[in-house]
Length: 112
Length: 114
Image 1 (cartoon, chains in turn orange, brown):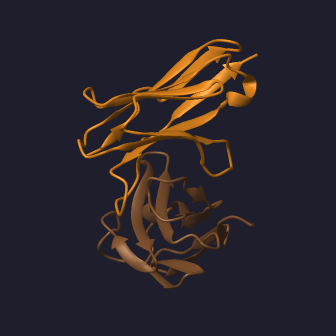
Image 2 (spheres, helix red, strand yellow; image 1 turned 120 degrees about the vertical axis):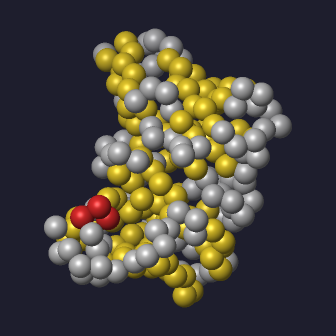
């Protein structure tokens, strides 16, 4: 089964708006959570990540919130820009000698 | 730093033929990962090496797929008797040591099985 799930296959937002991307996971042992960004015909690149010892991490316009009891984490993007248009992949894993599992991705479109 | 290098960028094979995909990780990175990307399944984990040793191959189809890392500078993914359902983009990634660190992905090899 899909251990990491993204609820929205796609999302559209007006430039300047705030958007939230969501990700749910099943494995209690996961303690590393990340968001990757992928432009068309390019490979995924790490956007932001957090470990389970914190419930929030902010980096400029991007903030990841972690809700361990709900097995849920989200990416908040403020002041969205057309260049944010991309596929966003959430990923989670136990770390160490264990694999990182990705969600299926959310296609984000930011309309000027 | 050229990043993770994957060759070839595109490969077309006939059904039943063998395909070998190559990956050169970033120098100094000890962890190498293979993923397969399809529209239906998204990014699926295949296998993971650390210090050239296989750590987790739980995502590898048991038949026809094999992966090796003969030295720290390259890894190969081999698919025997390719089938149309093997068509996908195969991505290789490397990290300094573990999966809970930044993964650097290559551009991928697009495999098309006719």
